[in-house]
Image 1 (cartoon, rainbow, N blue to C red):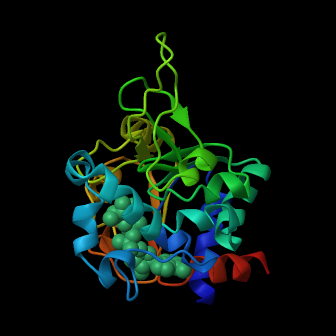
Image 2: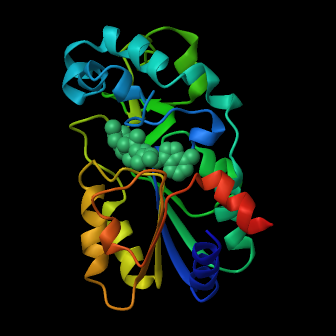
Length: 249
Ligand code: APR
């Protein structure tokens, strides 16, 4: 571990612009389960994936919302706290590094930790919008009714009443900020991947894309092995928050 830690710190020190890519493993030490580890959200019941699809929402919006709220423990969203891993990344910015965090997570913990350039590739659980008039609502409104609806009043004084669509990217939805991720990789000298199985497209293509960028160093901190470990200059199989505490001494 000693050698890995030394190499990690050396690569962080010599980097000026860092692109960070995170997944659910970033937040497990904050009490939020990941998807594919033992006890993960999909591991527990694969049929849940079908219910978290755009198709399912469009066909059964009234069934979608209670499942969505339960799966992502939406009532707890406000109580989850960033862990030492999130705080370490925010600290790198305070130390003058240029850090852009591209996260697959919808929990908002990177923002809560103080990271200032966060791109939510899979959207956010904090808001939902009316599919017709586009009016956006926050968690308070989303939590008020089991199935949140648009309460905008039109010119005839009638309430819109349409069922809102979550701002979380569902299966079948387009991933967000992906072009910005590629731009960031081109402008960075280090890619740091943390807490993701790299199972899901298009994120799974990032390691190979990054491998083709001359001069871009690549590090990964992930508890389990991934099929892309061999493409990285340094891979540390460790819990991120524990590791962050270790390097913070
Ligand atoms: N520290 C480091 N790595 C961890 C930790 C931890 N504390 N806990 C778990 N991990 C690792 C696991 O070993 C696993 O490889 O994080 C990875 C999490 O992988 P997934 O559960 O597949 O989550 P993720 O990669 O974010 O999934 C991507 O899939 O279903 C979609 O939309 C969902 O955003 C999600 C996407």
